[in-house]
Amino acid sequence: MTRILVAGGLGFIGSHLVERLLRREDVAECVVVDNLWTGSWRNLAHVEDSRLQILVEDVERVCLAGKFDEIYHLASPASPPWYMAQPLRTISANVVGALRLLDVLAPGGQMAYTSTSEVYGEPLVSPQPESYRGFVDCTGPRASYDESKRCVEAMLFEAHRAQGVRIKVVRLFNVFGPRTRVDDGRAVSNFVTQALRGRPITVFGDGAQTRSWGYIDDIIKGLERYFWADGVDYPGPLNIGNDREIPVLEVAEFIQRRFPKCPIVHLPAPPQDPTNRRPDLSLANRVLPGWTSLVPYEEGVERTIAWFRREMRPGAAAKRPLVANASAKAIGQNLRLV
Ligand code: UDP
Image (cartoon, rainbow, N blue to C red):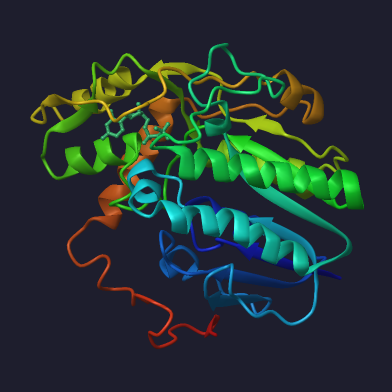
């Protein structure tokens, strides 16, 4: 039977992954470590499964008994305003967190890491294949995120080379969908929550910069297949995303058409905002034959609007208890504070 640890399991992507992991019959125990920095216990509050344990603690400091057969490291903010607000904490969660997690990996176990398209920085080639080494400013405003993700990739590939540790590294491209925080600050969630509040939709710069928007259900399916379901024996790095590249302004206009009373306003672009990003999925097509994004961004945005509409209903949050920090009282049968 398999013992699993998910760091960041109360987050947007982590909580979807935990739900998929709990579908497996070989899983004896699934321990989630999350400090509720950007995650929310509400993301798993509906899950009733005696195999799930939630520890509200920093991944760098958590005390864990025994070793784990599979570890998934997703403990990091992913939204620029969040990681820029606490850059050293971001580096610590990724880098110190990864070192801590390697300590509790069972011999022969597998360590999986969600890296990012940000390792390509301001890409000078498009689409970006995994072999592209990127163009990142190690002293720039995005460095805490970009460089800590790059450092953990380096750490895991060295552990793989030097000690034979089994690793799986994915690079995710602009994932969006239900369970993003209302105050997350990334483009799709910002546009949707602004529109639902009847406020202007904020496009940074002229909006000609592009991203490749991946809907959460498609991305999780790719992660599930790569991390465990297909029995893949390939360490990565592997691009996972939707390769349909769309300008930011087009997404804003799509949402604005649904909320005609909300104007689009242009604000100054953040420094070093990448101008383009699109995954080369040739490798993913070989490693995960048949896997592809099925949900176009238009459909994904509609589903995200429906989800945020429910989430932002007056009283919706109050109906479910919140745990604000690790010293708060444990709520929920599966929640254990350390
Ligand atoms: N963006 C925007 N308005 C917002 C939030 C983001 O125009 O309210 C832009 C941002 O400048 C970037 C793109 O949308 O060019 C994607 O930003 P996001 O924060 O979602 O992710 P990133 O790819 O920058 O990590």
